[in-house]
Length: 190
Image 1 (cartoon, rainbow, N blue to C red):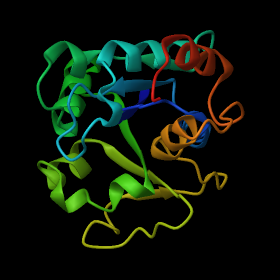
Image 2: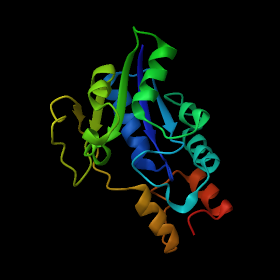
Image 3: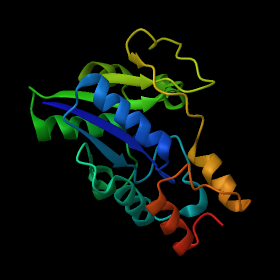
Image 4: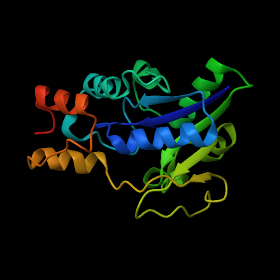
């Protein structure tokens, strides 16, 4: 069994996240890619003070009806700081030693890999896949220990989406339509 793990704050989830998951699912023949919303990330402040319940609801709406993708609430359920190594170990316990785990991330997150908790264990306990992203180079001490995957160049970030909302600029083609409606209905990121 091949399982993809895609963690993040998803604040909000956008098409870049979905493209990354889709391309990894296809390239590595994954049975399922699990989106794992962080409760409290160690290296990032959750801007806008958006409750975890709203971030989880947006992920659910974005993935609705797509059998390739699932959601794990492991990091939300355990609360506290979300370390990726703990999440990988959770999936190992859930799926057993025979499962091939693929930890998926974008190039922007991987730049700081040496600052992660137990980075050597991360790259040995799961196949660590870094998807390319415009403007980011994969270099440093872990560059040779990770797999790189070229994906379509979509220069979009959650911070850009949040800025656009504050400026009342359109986000309709950057975020799944159900998520756009949710953001508008709840008045998020204003």
